[in-house]
Length: 162
Image (cartoon, rainbow, N blue to C red; front, side):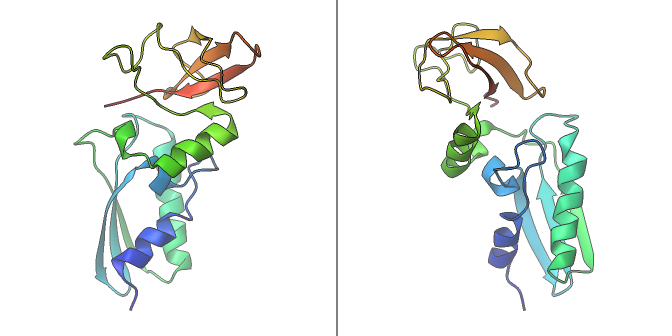
């Protein structure tokens, strides 16, 4: 019989639809796995933002992965509370995100602000922190658009959320 630990490993094979280089485990949206019996499982997920359009795709991908692994009764539960936090992301996921060209979330060490116009976000292309905010919203609502003043490349910054 499969174990809950193995199901967590299966979820590492489920890619985030908006950032395909990270898994739903890296993103921290899988909150709980409950193995009912050898054919039944409950998976609790929390959206990064309420109304996140990617959550339905994540739910479908979770179901498909578990069907592929032999499960027949799959219940994906959307849990809004506690709200998702970037603290739930894995460090490995943040590094994969950076290598993909998206600046991972960081707290501004010079202030208590989690996101502000003053934040020096590191450019994922050249590593410079001489960057500027272009728009509070990037390619998705969970990202902001920045531009590097050193290499002049625009890039998404995955916003902090606590």
